[in-house]
Image (cartoon, rainbow, N blue to C red):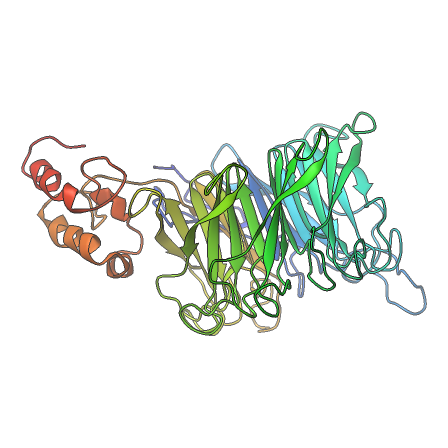
Length: 508
């Protein structure tokens, strides 16, 4: 894949752009809010849909009244979300700043965001709409209220949300359907948690009406069901990272499906847990869903070292109809203690991304993210293809506070970046980075110098015999460049075709 990118950046909006031609793992841009300020936490949540990005900044101090005048200050932590769009010149430009029409201090609007086409949803989990800290979420649409305007369509709450529910802790929108988590809702037992499904035009044109409330069949107090949510088509996944099935806070996630158990019913299909679940894994801290594949993060997992982290792939109908079977376990090729791989995850068709906010490669808690591809390293294998880091890492930035991937582009939030006030090491204004993660397979080119020649022989045998070592030496290369017989995996069957092609014979 080749993207022609501009050489110049738009001041204050885009701090850096990609090289003239972008390859796998290249940083395409670094984005800041045009009014970035200390403590905004811009990049704590992100979402990506085609050529449009939304970024949450829940600690933005803006003009908003106090919820208790005389006792609580006004204008603090009102929150905001920012829309960026890729223009005709290939530059990411801020086109809107979203705030709630009824914003109040400490609502933390922007603590969760999601985008699908021309529609966005933004959570404000600390708003007092139906009680103190009951929470709410807001729907915005492009061209609502005028051309190119991102107008607020409506505010939504759960039909039974109450004080301290934190409705809006998590949100996801997919087409005409949205899901919102209320992590402390008392539906089954105190603080067991719920998630709510909303449908566009349910109850009237432009209305987003609630069509279902989701709860775990085995709900228990303080499971934090609804901490993370995702949606794809007629299927939803809800994380409950504090579930205790395999030990305290081992975690779980639940799959729900529309019309499962009856027309119009969103029924629980299956409960997911890791095959090697253990105490404090926090499985379900992050979740993502794309068609028939689910991705669940477990940042507390101790596979390689304490809290090195892991993420798990589940596949629909693997192990039987309506079963979601564990298809793969993902870990970082350079996993280390307290990396917390799986802190944030995202999935788009055959591409997965998982962040490790505790990674120390560029300094203490600089953070990183890892991209995996289905069939990389073998049929149905999810292989690591590139590690993403910021070009300008700094201690405690925690690159990877949020991630999203759509097609060939990934976005990574860095909420504790100090770009807006670099002289202040605790500025935490925040930023986001965009990367190229497109499929760049080039048969035979195992050293990724753009040419297939004799210099690829040693890398070919390294990829064949020691894939982790290959990825460490060639972090931006896809080992499936060595798949010379086209069967979707790299193995001994590729040796003869490799040398046949190298010698001028038939090539894939």
